[in-house]
Length: 265
Image (cartoon, rainbow, N blue to C red; front, top):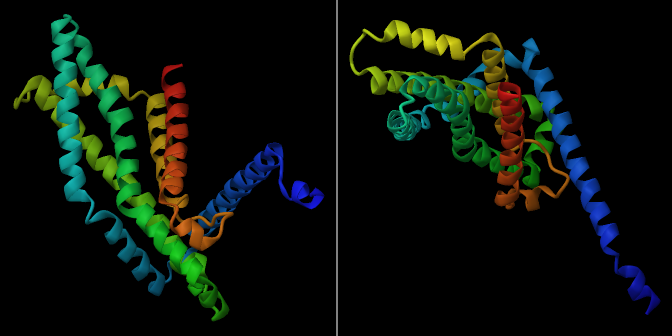
């Protein structure tokens, strides 16, 4: 009877173990991110054979995603633009519509949409493949044969995820700016000077710096978290799609919160 009672752990002990596992998991993510940063800055990571692998992953991470994302971002932008323009006109606040559109669509919505889209279409499936490689022992076998799994297998996927977020964010923001101009001024050039002046006033140095940093941390979160090792067993992690998606979404949400605080407080 005493043995059975000893075997049953109290809730506080289970919570403590869960907290330690959570801290250990994030510590492993930080260590993995630092390792990827060092490898990304190392010239030896870009030798001729490695460049071919990196370019292949860059194409896989961007080319299939661009057509669908352009359509999605255009539709979402047009819907929000029409809602904001119509609402501002109904309240007699049309002169503020452009400022609201640039801040809402370009600065806040598009980077967030890009990060989620790249995570669902590329980095999460790529992370599942990496988890399968860890579970099957192929990464360990590569290391035993003299290779570097982090440089040869993981770094190209991380760089591809970062590049995909940066490229799609640039495309979507330019597209949103063009659609905003057409929706407000039509297919004419008479409003170009006023439009560029208004956009320039929104993108002051502080907002621009926060926007760039947000896009950078979005790309790092999306690229590193699905590929990083986990405190759990690799085979168990490979099938935990909801948990991995939750970690990526939590990191994206945290970055977005800090960006909002920096922009508006």
